[in-house]
View 1 (cartoon, rainbow, N blue to C red):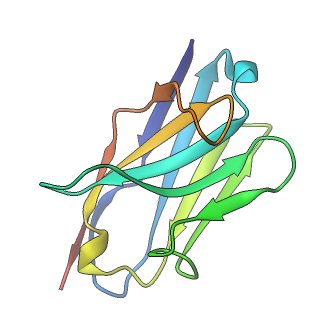
View 2 (view 1 turned 180 degrees about the horizontal axis):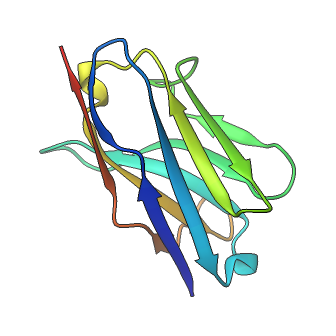
Length: 118
């Protein structure tokens, strides 16, 4: 099994920045991709960004492209989501997830709340 723990959420004003962290532990070798998702109240969970443990392949949702950056520390098994120029519509619970490929995420964290005030 793989355990994921997110941290770094909070309350920030529009235009501000936050950095989320996701620490992975356990059998991390069984996963190849780490992703960030978010779910706003009354909305479905949506993809935000992903990164591969191997190499530097990344992908972003159009809504965050140019504002958010996903990165990793392979040695520490930590994935980060740097969020800049935050907007009120970025308000959501942000989840870290991992899986064998970009189309399948088997393990999820408990989520961290991000609230952006206008």
